[in-house]
Image (cartoon, rainbow over all chains, first blue to last red):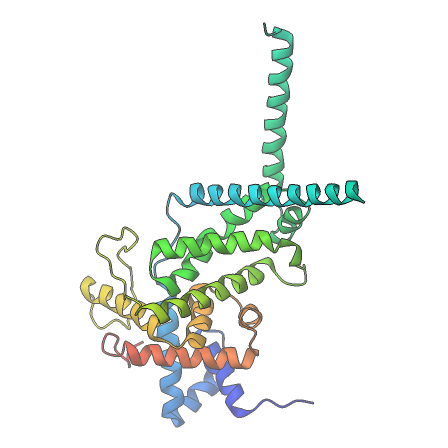
Length: 99
Length: 221
């Protein structure tokens, strides 16, 4: 049987609190704990605040030219793959004819 | 002289080929990521394009937090896809495709970051000519004032603060709060125990709060 340490449990609760994933009962207990422990309160408040701010960061998508450049790179990749396969075949054939 | 019947037959073949190609792409689009990957493994190269379309923006958004430069970021995203293709046969369905891809992307980002750190100091972004630097909409009550300038500064500070975080903290918080992956996925991608992931996320959030403390009021919700 394994037991979770107090620190582990607190980390789990703070993480869940920051993402509003605590049940009502858990939230009630955690609020009481926050009133008693300033450090936990600060960490929990920072957690919820930063989590909300980060969720609002603008998404950084690719540019319009991305697909074109990707297709070109993939075409080169396929070409290299074919060349590699062909040179292996030639090598095998050469070995077969010499032996 | 071209026989009109032969020409017609050839064009019919071409048309049929195009239709088959289109229907194959359509059916690929309905498949799960893992099924698309399976198609790529058996040689259906169109599957590669489906994977690219599904993940290009997600990976870019993730890798941008490491590069802070669109060109470098796009190069990294493309390299990630090429590595996915090259190592397609090593992918096994026991892992989600997204987890596997993020792992590849993260490793690439880490090695690029180390190289850059060795070469030069990373420049903090905020390029006025960057078309991607759009205005942010933050309606959160935690922002000190309502004025747009302050909001923009808060976000800019947050982006800068992210770059200042230690690598272990940054990767977990970006994967969780920006990419919104599950703890299980993050644990797998970073090869770290779940408890450690949660602890790092909490500490990262606390550090970010400390770094941007002047911009965001600490006691308001």
